Image (cartoon, rainbow over all chains, first blue to last red; front, side, top):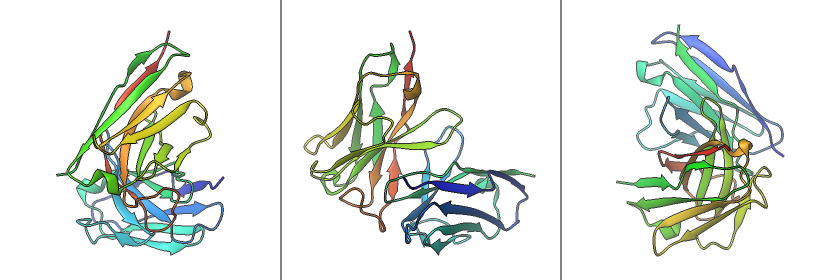
Length: 105
Length: 125
């Protein structure tokens, strides 16, 4: 089974900070990696697919990169509405990462 | 506007069954695979099951295989999850999600691009 790990599990940041979240796969998943954002009491929101392609309407401060087993989600300048939990998911067997909670420092 | 509305959750005794429904609108339902994902409140996301556009392909997480059955009715724009032999480990908020792709297990190019608000399943005697 393909496992995903995320680091860090949580981070504290300020508005305007650059934030990077890492997702690692236990085996090669090429670019079949998706990122979601979830806020409390809400369903996940789709952000990025194929590791680096932003969904329509996702702000350009979000970016994704990586291939194979190592992936990153970067928020170039954190905004108040970005405080949330972020999950990666691989699209061969649909495993999710454990999530990274981004909160206010 | 795309909408997915789950229903059918509730309190059920251990060992009993429950059928979840997800009614959709705002997109051509028959063209897309559909999935169920669950989340224990305060915890992470777990993929449960997926079904291809024409119902020819289904897949399940190991944790539910043999107990849960996914189905869809393209005439009713709905997807279902029949859950049998429910246990404490099945307590969660169950979301239905629309895929970008028409098939399942297709690798790159896919994502769960729209989600419902979820329906809560509680298992207790």
